[in-house]
Length: 103
Image (cartoon, rainbow, N blue to C red):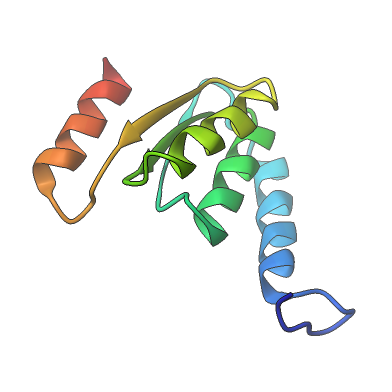
């Protein structure tokens, strides 16, 4: 378990709470959130938070195991989600992800 600060919360939990507070103010209905690096940590949290804010979520991840897992987690929150295997180090991969998102 991660190191805790303040009221016994780990830094990622505090960041998640702050992000949810912001997204609660700015609903993302009819919007698409593209999140890269969702296999673990912050990327996965951002996908969940965008779904909570009513956005559709594009899961842009290179890993063929964790990407679809996160899509299922988003869809379990009754939000649309798309897995696009993406290597952000390569522009053609990013371009393909954007084309799939807009297509």
